[in-house]
Length: 483
Ligand code: AHR
Ligand code: AHR
Ligand code: AHR
Image 1 (cartoon, rainbow, N blue to C red):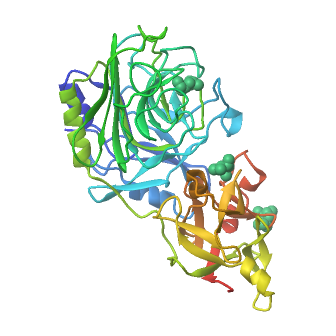
Image 2 (image 1 turned 90 degrees about the vertical axis):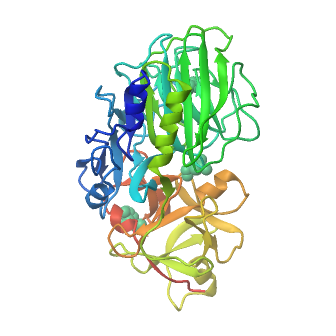
């Protein structure tokens, strides 16, 4: 049985079931998600390998070979057509895409294996979000519901709000109690749990709650599992937060009890829209990774949730490589040469803090050779990827800031570490490598007017996101460093 079969047996059936990694009903063999590729904007649908099985990631890999791909639809497996698509602008923010829509997630930002079979999760960078404002069957008013979501417990931030669950149908903050969603991260504007986080909390609108009252509730622990199972459920007068290691063991209850006493939360005013990766009013500062999750009709029992947790554990989530192509050796000095026709004598270099491309050869000055050489380091923000330390300024690394590459001294912060972590993959033109930003996997090292950025393949955000010449500009030949 899959998670939604177990919820059905428990009398609290799924009314929305989303996963890019696997079928959530043992008999489900329909669409899991849709990807859209950069080369021609065409789409394809990813199905399970077999009924009830893991996603057929090979379909994606073939379709997306030598180009970029975005997750354009996350299908609802419940039969209610509660699909998640690109989120529209909201009361708090417009997204970076056309007409204020949010970004779509990269299709390759969150590779995993399930019992050894490759699949991809949904890597949400700030600015990315999915929504369904016309969901059917989800809880409204004070009606009971349950939710679980399997997330990457190591991918989070303190922005508002990486959520999955029930939210407003008009993309605005319509008041206390108008949301009931799982939140995961270290946002402590409202409530927080024990330690420094990240925490599972409930986004009930105008507050992330770790317990009955706003503020610190020490029974809600900091969690650090690579795969985390998160639960929020609510019914008249009562709600709960639960969590577990999604790869082993059982659920713990972090809060179960009365609704907040502040006005608006009892009774609740749930509206029944579904969000992923954003707050109810399209607050888009959160980040996180989603693998699977559901919403139910009715308040699931702890026993039902225990069986769902066992099913999640049995799915066998595990990590896999984040890189491909030419292997880089930690500690070695490398150079990165542009491959765009007309620019092939230019190398990734820096002038002060600006990262650019410059013409470099064996007869260049030692200064320039140093500026065009980089020491490969283990990724400061994720050890499965890499960082690039300046050869002439030790302790300074290539990072992105406002989507431009700069060379900056490490301040040791989580933000610096993440912004200076890059995941090389087989070059988009099938030569050399393309270098993906770990935290923005739709974005790659790209030269544009001989200056270096992290760029996405088309879109209105920046001039350097131009689709023209993208694959060439984002593919680099790797050699031993000049010095
Ligand atoms: O409740 C926290 C956030 O506050 C909600 O997600 C958002 O709608 C509002 O800004
Ligand atoms: O480069 C994009 C973002 O810009 C970085 O993640 C952040 O540090 C800066 O605001
Ligand atoms: O960086 C040089 C060129 O500038 C790129 O190839 C092109 O995309 C841009 O016009």
